[in-house]
Length: 136
Image 1: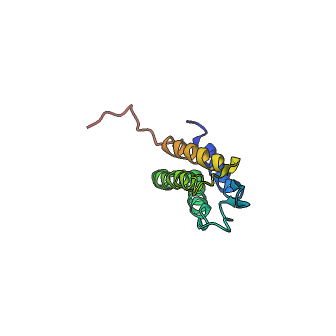
Image 2 (image 1 turned 60 degrees about the horizontal axis):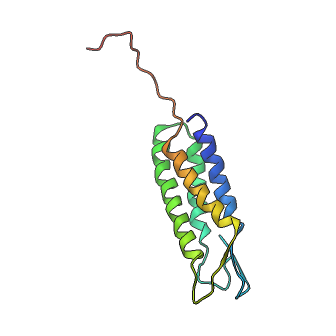
Image 3 (image 1 turned 90 degrees about the vertical axis):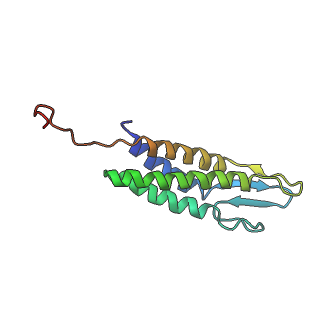
């Protein structure tokens, strides 16, 4: 894919921005949960790991080396796994209180999946072997 590295870098930035937006609201308790603000719950800062992994992945998308693309598979995969974990954990109903999902949690999930796809199919220019010389 010709623009996979740029799309991956933009998606990583989008995932980082989604960690600062609202993920869910819990109307019964009057709480709003985002990636870094989850006061009143036991979630901690669930978006911190996504931010760190996406920051490293963003830099690796922009490095035109084979080792960077291979390393990026780990960081994008770990980020996607953590986003799925956050989606399951944060949006689950507890004691009859079901949170209302906001756009931020969907942007996090789908952005992480797209970032993983762009890491699997990077645009990498490899040196071509000279085909005119005979092989020995």
